[in-house]
Length: 171
Image (cartoon, rainbow, N blue to C red; front, top):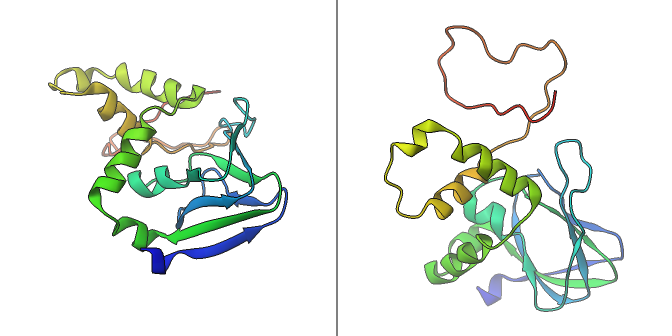
């Protein structure tokens, strides 16, 4: 894996990854500092930005759970990163990826908690004997996508085969 690490340089206020975009890389901060921010469905920042420093990493959630980016990370000064491509990351040791996955269960933000709360209200999930509810709901909430629907737009039709669940957050 070391031979596959790509040095990556950014200047202050550059966006390294953006919430809701596709994921192609995992990053370690070699030098510098970054700010992590989360936005709600209205694109308003929902909690106090967290700072990441030398030795910290980011970008793992979207790669582990095969979902869109869950946060925006922006450099606060000149930064040097070790960037790892998605295929290389996915071929790393299972133990390493499992360790990163375990760490994601400790991430807390308001929107993540809100999505888990919505999922727990679905009767369907009560019929299953889930050994670890926390992991189950945590992993499912990363698969939830936010969409905006313009007023008076039909997005569900009568007699349409159901292949998804919609939660109306606002409107």
